[in-house]
Image 1 (spheres, rainbow, N blue to C red):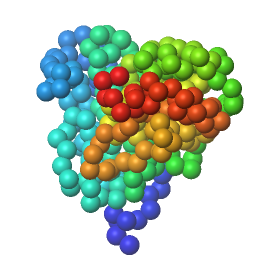
Image 2: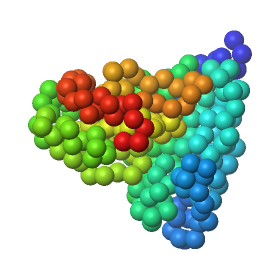
Image 3: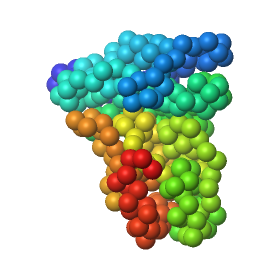
Image 4: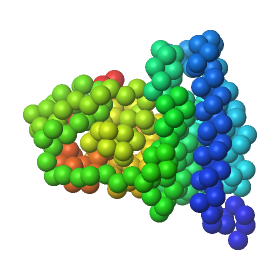
Length: 276
């Protein structure tokens, strides 16, 4: 068995991952608090800052040695097909919630996952300004600042706080849900389900692997479920990095939400419409 194929010891890897992501977060936090980070727009009009690039470069140097032979996929690195031949791939969003960063809102996070055979096996979503870290390893549970997380569940949607865009939540209000607090970054929104801040979260079919891979593992290890509107769980390191419309919740509530979504033609259409 080569070092590339050898099983990883996830406990020490998770400890080192937390250190590296903490260091990367400190780089971004200094630029955020200084208020002078240079910014510009990408071809798709989304914002990017020098903090995104600095964190991406730092992580690209420090993470691959933690899993020898691993590939790389990041929002801020040009993608290449080379990663498709790798069993393990780092999937990184250096700053998820760049709009929040630019607006001076401390709700952006550094999101990092290690994927093996298409499934995340280690993940961390770190807000360095708030000092909040959600983390998980496959089979080892999820934590919030070191405290174990376990979601509560219900078959009933009445009063369930759901995070997402109003266009997705409004049709579900007749089923009893209420609109939860708006959270800029998708990774940050998803982990709020794991820690109980939200009962569920929805996302348009516009997310990429780097937006959700780390949060996906944290949700699962906390006992929650993440799928598309058809009930299929995301897989990673495919040729396309785009994911479908998503719903995250504890299992019974998740099933109730899927049933409610399927009963609303507007949401069935929204699952195919990247503008909603």
